[in-house]
Image 1 (spheres, rainbow, N blue to C red):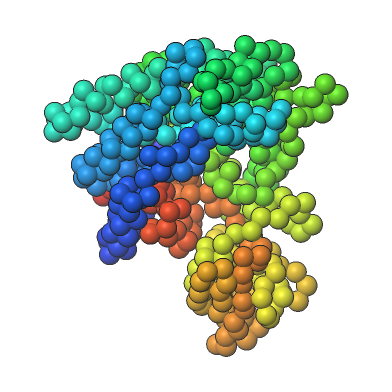
Image 2 (image 1 turned 90 degrees about the vertical axis):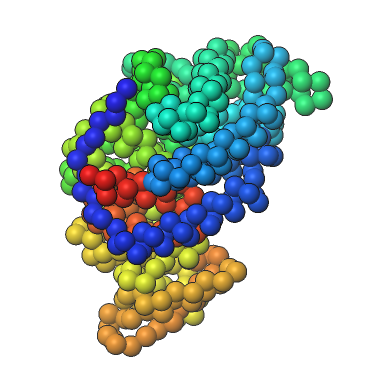
Length: 462
């Protein structure tokens, strides 16, 4: 299957900055690969959040540089994960761990079980790298047989989840992935509640972000194998995703619910949802959603350019959190994400900040929403952050040329424009914001930085 190549707005990164980013990121990913080695220990859903970011990093690092050392890293980690797989009573391999479902619904945190999400996120880059190995004579000579074995292995994992009931019809032609209430007894490796996992009312739909990650796995499988069943599963989820996004008259979307019922199994006997339904204050979950939406768009599925443009407008005007002001939930962000040049509103205006609202100015939002009565408004000149506390030096709008220093700590609530980095290829202002805020030597950049450098490499080669 050949991906579409929609027109991008991407601008060339400064050459010196690009070289610096690569060096800083390479040091971080190398440390991850050699010293942290979560591939040797993680089980259950921990694989998704602790192993998969590095696996993505290895793949995108190779795509950005064509340096085979990243292939070696990925193979090393993949083999470490595979050799730790446990044969379960149905003959399938998995990595059962405590709270492998990642949800408390139906007491599923009590089960010791494997995770479709983990397998999707960790093995997506493995499949994509196997596809690259098959195209490159030198890599094929060294890793061709192993690459093919990886594809066969991941297809076995896919068939496992089909057989166990890992996807369910939503009733409108859509399809949603689910977590199932069963587990493995660690003592005797026998099933607990396996035969009843698909009984009426059992199980729970994944939240949107996890559904999108699983759909991206399906797209990778379609890319590499060409088998339409993978495309079908992804496309049917993206139809559900699109149905949950409500356009507003101003050309943006309402921020959609992090989680909402996908079918009757998501309701309690009294008719109320098993899981809370609403906008999540953690903006990172929506970053995963937009990755899925952009991937669908780039594959010519469900989402159009007009809808990407609407997402871009949403990113430039919508703030993290449930609502502003009077939000029902707060989410605390590490103040290290603040950068010189950002516009900022701080309340209170002295001492240690309680609330901060900040953004890189763009054509739709030139300044932040006020952080509260009597807030200090201005531009960040510098920021320091060390072991839980820090200071922000601000040039106030009310007194240009002067400086005010405001403290921050781990309890400072920081609100940022969403500015989803998945939209970087399609908007120059979001690209600018990404370059201003990303840290190439942080673990948070393990996957996003090499992905961005890959896009820059493609731009250079045009």
